[in-house]
Length: 275
Image 1 (cartoon, rainbow, N blue to C red):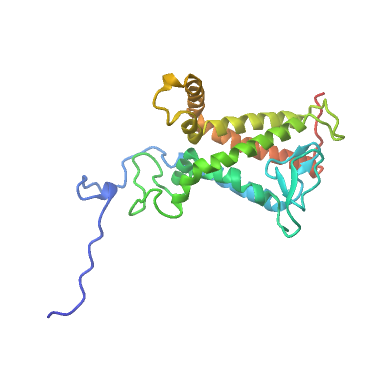
Image 2: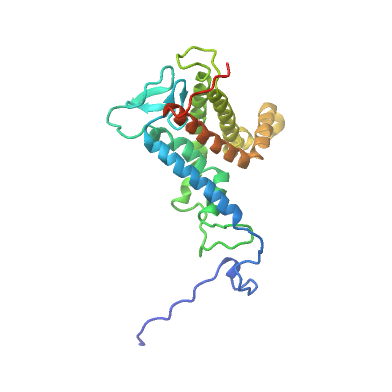
């Protein structure tokens, strides 16, 4: 019986390098700046990650009456800054010594990270899967969202349910911005306008979600028997066509909202009063 080691198997080529495809040495034939879009996407998302991480761990300058940062609302820890009339629920006791933002950000961030548009954004921007149309991805194989950690993307519909009450609480926070620093109603400052724009974008982005569209009318077999849900499904469908734009607009607005509260709380600026 012959002994010895077996010769290594030749690497199986896949995708555009498969033996059944044309033998073209170049990875792609695109001559335009195809890398610009994924690079811009990666830069934008990375900037938000850096900023939100800094603010989440700062544990300071997140409340300037009557404004509370959307990163810290609702405040669930005992070490929260007292917010008169605000969503300050001390569910977690004194044992929680970290920033209270870490208790709530998991829900909106989980909703965004598993969002269909954001999947496309960071798949292309960070994982190059694929980086652009007609440009082969560098990975040898593709398993989709069937293995860990990408299988967690299937939890998007559940994060959608969790994002709804968060959006409701941020709506409540926006209503409270019509008070002044003494908590008297009838106030409107620049922060009020910023919060109003933010909450409109938050709701537009949330309701334009693919999961929302599916919940409203995705399982209906006969639209004629459900005219109300069909009408709602059509409205959400029109929003869904702008899901990418709403994703970026709401991402920028929520960061701007938090930064404005930070400037107020740190004493860098004062809130200009409109009336």
